Image (cartoon, rainbow over all chains, first blue to last red; front, side, top):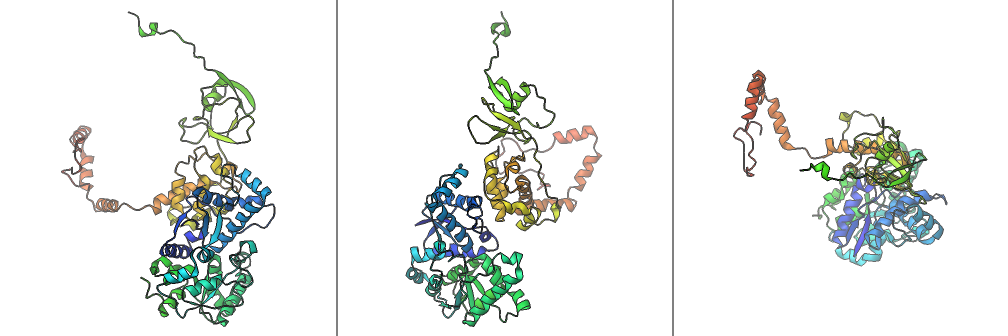
Length: 295
Length: 252
């Protein structure tokens, strides 16, 4: 099966660990992905103003590139890119009037009407690979790892873009279980991490992220697993600040789910780019012997 | 015997005249002319807004429209042939802010470009820049590359840019794309391309004084001696094979 692949800007720099570990996992699973030969920033946030069509142009242009490539599926890894592209796709599919306006404005491109299916790696695994098949490919199960899956907002909301039901999702847990880990359910797994409020209101964003980590830890999680570079920044990279300002008791290692998947599938550690996570994240994996088996 | 001139009948140069509109005024010009020649034919004289006349300097960018067509067309006046009923004007210069930086203080990181040109992130991918580029540069694609920190891609995609400024004239985000691309190419050339190892050896040899004696003896020569030395220098023969090596290996 051939699949088009949209990386997103952050995955080429600070979020390299998400991309390279995911691509290595796909290879292990025997799936060929083709990065779009030309792509632009998806816009990062889906514009909510009903008539703000100019901000649909960026994501739709990426969808047109996928259509040009001739594949049916556009795979995404970053939860925010997924959300923006999936919602722009739904708009082009379901709203004939706006579709006409956008296509006419982009008259140098192919007309687009939602022909591509935008998927995130998690629902791709569920719907096109299957948890059983993933489990079969695991060579180094993450036995005994108590990992809390953090969904955040953009994988689940709004409903039409959700990869699972938003009130009691299980897709992330199913994935972690297939990798041999213990999935820790916790109250705040679908609460917002603060996202871009980190720029305009950094204290408020710090507080909500702190609450999420605290909550996960109270439910017995040893590590937090997520799918979004911005969530990773707020929940992972700001832990030092949380310690100083809010009295965070213990560091919690934070990983992209693809990094842990890569270890479970026997992908070489270098592909995971753990140097871009906080130091304790790598330390924890060493301490618990999750690295030793990866070739 | 007749001369060549006598044998050739005098022909009238009678190119068909077509109407064009320069800044809204109609002129009849020969259909085979470039826009630049046609404007001169119509009686204008270029003092500025005209440079190389060879399609590389970017001074004569021209915007035009055709009858019953909403599209904006562009071209370099020195390269584009006139069409009947085209409405045109030249945009020889477009104001665009170029950031000031000390190049030697840069390290080649994308963040440095973001700091110098933060408006980069005002791009909404409308693609007006690419559509207006007379050199067919994928302007929006290099802006996208810069946004994701790929300086090498930005440098390569923008390679054909002649800095005419039309991209900046049409930008919704008010970017000066071509200045950003120029910085990307500079950074790419100076900091990101692989270094030539042999160059280090040569520079070290120069610094160690390997050529001092040679230069000194050249400086002591008079003009005649210099000519002789030049003519007697060892040259690679045109028919030399790949294994040819000079007898004198001081420069290697």
